[in-house]
Image (tube, rainbow, N blue to C red; front, side):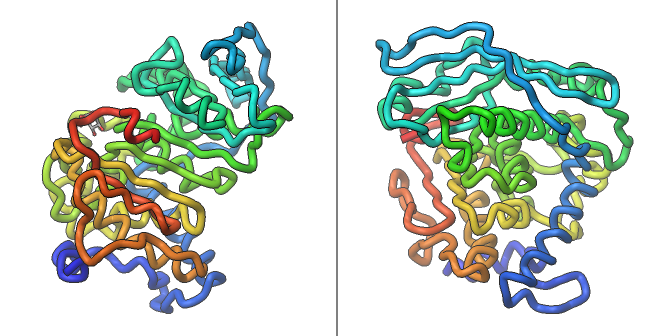
Length: 345
Ligand code: GCU
């Protein structure tokens, strides 16, 4: 049944190299991964500049939070760019126990941090640290060239859009976390909701230091396959939010079936690391079924590396029946477009 559903989407082949060779080994997958990264950079999200040599963090403030169960560090991160130093603030919340906890890098819509999309006390009680930043402190969610966007030259066709910039910032947060001894940067998960779910996926796709990514209701140009998708389309997203992407992406508006790529390729770049795609049943704009099918279609990138991909019955799971056994996890929960406690839990 899933095979038939996928066949209808007529996806471009994931497991075939550009020269026609089948990707049958983990080694060949490394070659294929490079091709796919380049494809998505050129046609969708744009090329990001190289990482800066180092990132420094200045702790501005230290506060006990969550009934004294955790410490919040307000930190300014700084690094060099071709046009001078760039800084943005983050909040790092570290539970008192366990020692050296795993850490979420949360790309957030809001300041102050935490917010309605980050149930911090639950997260702390479960033994995780969180490093969060407001995405607009990196660059504004507009076509304006400000913040990080103003610090690098940008090619009109292939230069990064704001999703690339926010993703780059999440990687700089991880650079900083690697310098701290009180969190385990080897177990870092990048996460975000909606446009920031798209960002979390693009971040983990490029930055293999993240051992896990969780996208929440990321939909169009995130976890959802574009071919046959309901709700938002490439035409609509590149008309309303062109600056999220590189200039080339617009060329695929209303030409989904001709594009040499689709979003299962984005997910595949996270293999063999852990990926969790969260959907909400009333979020038809994002399209849960297209998000689920992308997980199925991306799974061969895990199996070729000897990690099971999505472990699923031969149909979309029922609402609130998470699939969490494989390297790719998926759930569709009750309710609307929101980053809820259910998703975090
Ligand atoms: C809009 C947009 C989506 C995006 C969402 C969000 O609805 O069309 O692509 O995911 O905003 O970020 O909340």
